[in-house]
Length: 625
Image (cartoon, rainbow, N blue to C red; front, side, top):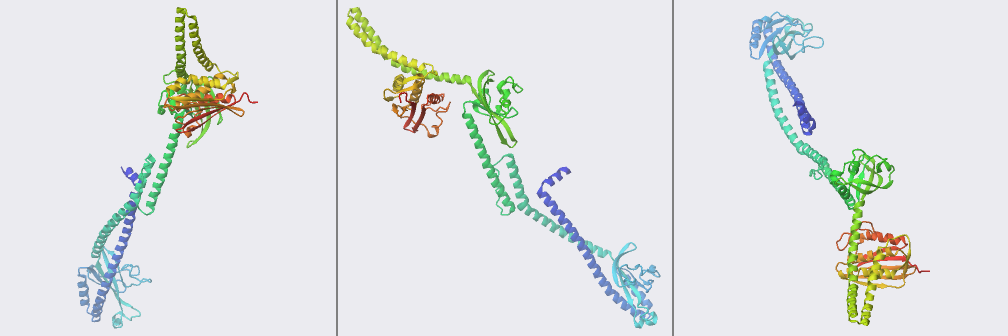
């Protein structure tokens, strides 16, 4: 308990100030009281000495008169009466040699005091040992007395008995012992009164000083300490709210300003952390950051979905435990480990592997890893950033996209072929009827009518075959007009269903060198994107012309347009934002640009919100000389 109190006293500024103040005041009060008592006692002694001096003068006059008259009995009576007073302990008359000749206490008669040694009064003598007038407190037996000593000077009238004045300067010594108890009681009473008054003053001073310190020092300091502890715990809303204009008030305001800056800094850091995490979460591939201890220090939403865990359960786990289900790091000779392979900052590596998924099955992944260094409060450390792409999911998405595109094409093709087939059916039935009736000429006429319908069906199927032909490295002359008209024919039903009118302005004879199937894929992707941008109908305009050494194909729409900040991202792989709300793979435009660049061309876009977009395809003119 005592140790705890001492510890609290050591930690509490208010308690230390109070104890220090009380101790100092007590010491000062004791010193002051001691000095006052000594001064008061000295004053009493001086006052009593002066009174004794006056009594001694009166007694001296009486004694001199009695001695001049040789009235020894009268002198003895004066000594006895004076010694009988209440505050007088004894009265003695000594001869010059220190022998008691008269005394109120008869047992002292004939006794001798060693005057040179200070036996009468140590303080009542001169430097040569002679007796001098004075007074002092001393102990006479068991009692403390104030002894007053008065030498009686020799005078000429006394010379007949005491001899000449030159030889005998004093006739005797008058000694009066006053009772010291009264003096002590007075001194004690005065000291007690003074101590009580001093205690009241001391208590008032301590309380007033404590209140002032509490209000102006310890209270504000305690508030500063409380706010500092709150900030240390992470409560960034804690504030001192100081209003005083002194140094402590300025310190409180400084602490509040520092807390404001700290809260702003923490908010900025949190916003950057949230932005970084949002960017990582926007990446469709799984992203994880691994430190040198094989611990995952950051992961995005896609990676958490791959392993079937929440971000809280992923961060801090070992990379090999999640990806390979191993308790120890992977063996570098059996498995590619980026932490082992990438020893230099900036180095990168790409490889395929098999990772564990959330349902404990293995999935094929492509891992792109890069090494970099991070500087934080723990120092500079090397980390590896891995982008984990689920190849099976990509294949599934690509397959679904192809199925979706095939569905649109199949619908259009079915519509385009249905009418010619219906005409063919009607012509065949009419020809068969004519043959049954024996009218061969009418039958021939009916058969001739179905010939264009058959050619229409053949043209459509030929277009499909060309579109689905494999894209090889073999280049050929491609007629641009034929490609665009075939694509327009395939998309005619989809355009009509969307309320879109197709407007073709094609310069004849335009030829480029490339892959027929790939060029058809580029035109159909651009045309389909235009249809998607006009969910409420509009105009699809395709223009093909020659400009210098280039063949220029423009695919424009009157749709919703593309946001300016998205123009630089539409050609990125896996970026998709269709106006009709359907989520695509984000690969179409990336593939188109890759095809165009492979044959030395370029693909650009301009767009205006609410007015539509225009994609421009520039290819080298095969007929330019």
